[in-house]
Length: 345
Image 1: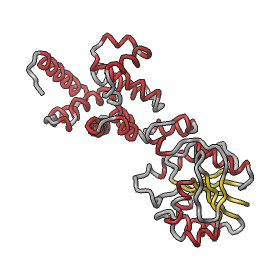
Image 2 (image 1 turned 90 degrees about the vertical axis):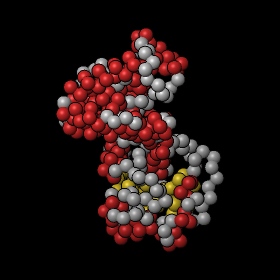
Image 3 (image 1 turned 90 degrees about the horizontal axis):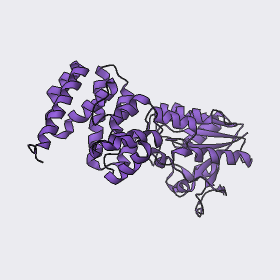
Image 4 (image 1 turned 45 degrees about the vertical axis):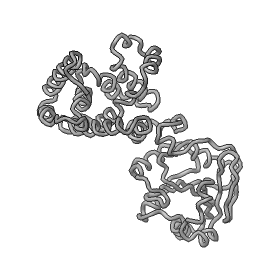
């Protein structure tokens, strides 16, 4: 059999990957495409999403794809995933197969940095996929795949862009586990606001663990609670005029919570009711649900705000509802003093 291998971290896998595999199969360049999931990838220095999550997303994406399969060979070998070592192991295990390796033009330009590239080029041919009208520069045996490829990258997906170019099953898994929620927040917030959101998320998880609330939901709501905080008043007004006009009679500083609940659903496909309620009500703290109370408390008592909230946090650890009532009382007093001009920046 002719096997075309697509190697990578697949963080996450998207329709662009699947389109390339379908093309190779449709044009009879291979009988099967193997998605070689790397454990540790050379020339990439960021922290990867867990292997188990990336593996699960690949399994979901390939569930209904004929002649495509997931290979965990590089995980079994452990260590950094070098293509030369992988190919030699494949040839050892499957001597009856003929292997080619699928790469993008960006990888073709880096081939000179690959381990044992001269020896590797004698073992396999590369199938090179350029983007749009890119010119291919590859000094090693290769075949250019001429086709109009989807303009999407995993890095864009991690930043919350072009999520419609994910298989639905992958998108649902990614959203349910909030795999890239932090990336999405970081891309759309100032450094100061993002630091606050990270701190709030940590306190949310801490309180959720103590009070037996889903820590995953607590993290999602905490990291995304202020996703619309830095929108301008006009932008918030326009957005809510269409989606939730009834809330516009309330003070403008509250609007970002309402907008945020819609944004995480529409753009991140996070449809969990409790998470959306927690974000929606986090400014006023007027929703008596454990997760919503935790997010409200964590936002107001965030240790990074610069004042000592440790005593009130301890009260919240002991009794969530009592702590929530105290925080609400403190907030009412603060707002009253602010209105009377007793608090100054």
